[in-house]
Image 1 (cartoon, each protein chain N blue to C red):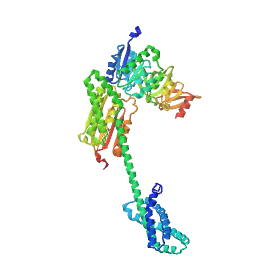
Image 2 (cartoon, helix red, strand yellow):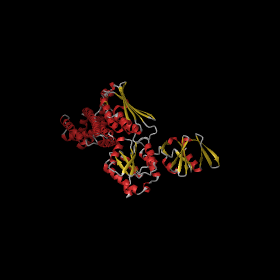
Image 3 (cartoon, chains in turn yellow, green):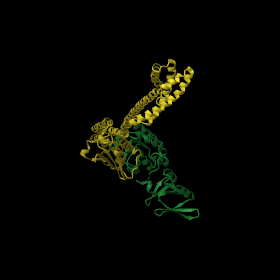
Image 4 (cartoon, each protein chain N blue to C red):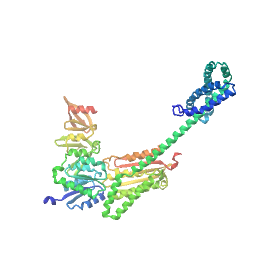
Length: 354
Length: 253
């Protein structure tokens, strides 16, 4: 769609041509020695026709996007196109003047027109190039507006995704079960009930505080997982054992928040919780080349029924990491009948784009 | 008078110690109840139920080994149950198996009391009301619209869990089925039609009025007489194939 013809801009465009028509009328009357009626009858229709004729330069502008390296070629192309358009215009003008000469009963109309042809031609080329410039401006203006809108949309999407991720992180069943434990402890061990309330508050607060951030040090992400595990430890007691193998150099690496917590939660829900005797949940972190590798490993019942809902947390995590790091992040699942392991490999630091 | 004084024998089944202790504490407010067993997983529950014959189950759903629905299936649906779980998404299935009630964690004492009075009413109606066609329980024990993943068999107080992939064939024997897996045969009280309806039809084919076959086990089919064939399994077992069974098999392969 032509940005001037079809978007309500035509009146503005034509209004811009009024001074041009005025200038032509005045020049051809005063400098060209024409009477005012002749000058008006010649220049106003011709200008109006040319205003529409010049619009085709838009397709030329589109075909040749503005590039500094090709500026000379583009300028040449528009000048040549302007010359051709101007010539066509003046050809049509010749027909018009013939009619005008008959109407005014003055053959001088045609003679004067032919005398001024070079001037009209130069004027036509100039106008065509001017229109091209305006159209280039319009195109770049619309492109930047579209880019702005896209950036805005992207930001809204990202914010929504973060929020969704955040609310999805806090599994309601985890809360219900924890509250049930608190309720159990109030009668038998009030001090433990209070401790559990504090642990739960700790976990919720860190999730809400850290979850909204772009990235946090791995140290904080591990602390968040620890807060979660501290609550689960009250529920599962001796059935939940923990083992951590953390490399000091990895702890300061920035990572997106809430990447470990869903893995740890899966390890419990789909692993440890299904074992009568429980088992050991293992978290490992180390530097790997320019990035870091995180691993969460849990035992599981080889004959256990796979609880539905498995892999939702994992696929959300995959999508989050892919959106952020592209192919630079990998999520690897190592599955054995009695063991389940997820390994995350991410670029270390916010300079991952480089 | 005697009816009033009757104590209700309750069994608590939950894998979390704290959840059990909460129920224990809340049940203390109801002197007519007596806790006869506490179990931390489904296997224990099936064994303890056989030994103690409780009147009522307080049953968690998500547990190691067997979930609450599977426990109910293995107990033959004869013991009324109150489900106690943090998950509200199983409520519909719970009603399908005629659960007395469905309590959500954290458990409130008032809701528990309400559930217990329902249980008393149910028990007063006698054992008949508690009995439920096993078929319905077995169907509800299957999570969602998926096919059965494992066959549970109770053998006195022991429970066998047979993943369907390990099953070779299933034979009808009156009201029972004999499930053959790994050279052994297990009896279960269920009809062949009932179990057939729960199994993946792309995997188990009714090759005969009395036989379901795991098609992955089929080695070849031999013509044995006119219109009469036998299926030979990979381990050499021979099973009869009816004409209709042969058509079903051909369609699948």
